[in-house]
Image (cartoon, rainbow, N blue to C red; front, side):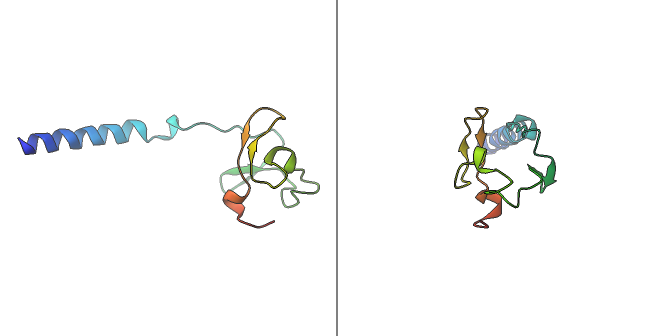
Length: 88
């Protein structure tokens, strides 16, 4: 009986893993059109190295680049520090 239960549990776990953990189920992110540079699978604006100046990253990513809700288009923006650390 234990063997049957273990087998059923294992099969259930495998089925769950195959159906729940696939990239098609993850939310898609469509970056703005001006984010044309692909760096480490993330799109950046061409002048991203100057986020407080010409890059104007603060308009969407927040004044401290911590991300959040962008009122410009209603989307949630990621924190720049997630990938860049305390670079700025």
